[in-house]
Image (tube, one colour):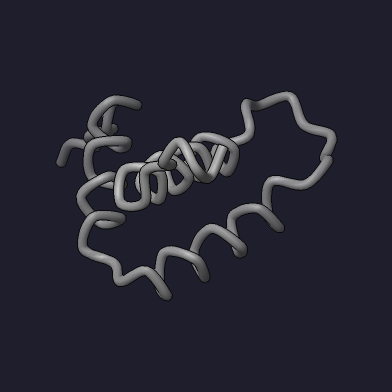
Length: 71
């Protein structure tokens, strides 16, 4: 029996795939949930939620790029 751990890159790749498959509504809901979870906390380990929130925001920007009139 062996236990395999995913690398951070592999986890992010899978997350990006999941985010791409979500509808806009699902992506917004996911982003709000992760934003709530990434609130201030005390821990000795890195916060995994912040990376997921950054990926959700990147996917939103990919789908909805800003135009010059929006800036």
